[in-house]
Every structure is written in structure tokens, then in C-alpha cells.
Image 1 (cartoon, helix red, strand yellow):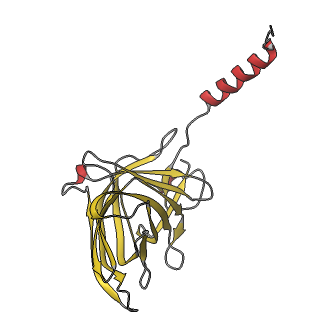
Image 2 (spheres, rainbow, N blue to C red):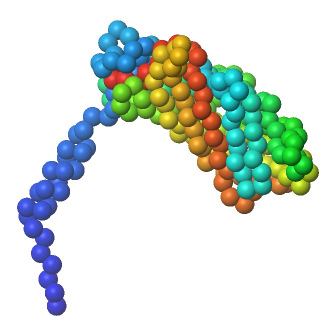
Image 3 (cartoon, rainbow, N blue to C red):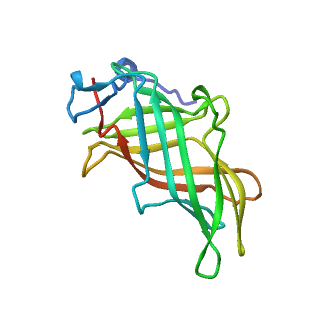
Length: 228
């Protein structure tokens, strides 16, 4: 019968690693008007509005196994509820959403209009989805959007063009890349390739769809994710 011996040194090493990991501070994130760490007096405080939308002549595309849905308008606003800081990220709520002018190929080289609406969004600010900014490096980071009490972010898609028919609700959380910037010329951007799950409808694809977009932050003009 084999006997297994655990090295005391190995146990101590693992324990020390766990202790170091557990004691490591969480990322300190603030919204900053300058690409500088620490941000200091350049912090955007709580109750600050961030707005982003598609630049002119750009599109957001919902790629599905049935057809691609292209939208000329897509954007959202976020009202921050915290300022972030030591050991914290910046929390907020989505309080504005626009998605419009969406089309689908008609099978004959043209397009047909699609009805795309936002699902699980409330009419009052506390019911919109939760938002969270987390810094990375050099003023960049990520934006996560998660469910509110009404449910996760969703797109309800109704298209009836030729043989390409979609009648489906897609939902999921989102985690988008944020690149800091200062307008004019190089505004901050929010880029997503979000996986949305088909959850119900008369005509849904058999697999996840991908919601692709690159938004420009137009408020504030200068926007970075930095440490305090």
C-alpha cells in the first residue's frame, strides 16, 4: 500500500501564496478627465453622466445564425452612483438607451426594415441595468452591464424580409472594452462583441448571437479610467 507524504515546505508555500492573494487590494478605479495616475483633482464624482453613441456612418450589427441585423443608431447613457476609489470600481446605472434604423437583407440585394427594441429596461432610473467601470492600464479598462430587478440587457428583434425571418428576444450581460481619449479627434470609445442568448420567440437562431459595436463617448469630452 502506497503512502503519500505532503511536504511541510510545500504546504507553507501554498499557504503563503493564498495569504498574499487574499490580502492583495482590489483595483482602485476612478473616472478621470486626464490620463494621469493618480488622478488627483481630475476625478469625475458620483452623479456624473456618461453618454456614448455610434459615430456618423457607423453601424452596430447583431450577427445571428439566421441573418445579420444592422442598426444605424445605438448608444446609451450611464449615471454614476459612486466615485470609485481605493479598492472599488465605479458603479452606475444605465439611464438612456437608443437603438433604431435597423435593417436585414431582403434576399434580393437590398434591405428591409427591422423592428429592434430594448427589453428589460424600466421607465425610471432605478430600474435600468447596473453598470460598472473597471480600470486596466494607460487610461483604458472595461465596462460591465448586468441585470437590474427587471432582468438583463436585451434586444427584441422582429424581422420579416424574404426568407430571412427573425422573431426573437436576445438577452445577456455585457462586458465591453473602454479606451480612454480626449475629444476632438480622439474621443474615448466603448467596443463590444457581446454574446446574446436567444431566449424566446417564434423564430430564434439555434446559437448565441453577437452584438458588435464601437461607440464614441461624447460626454464627457475627456474620459479615462485611472487610479485615484
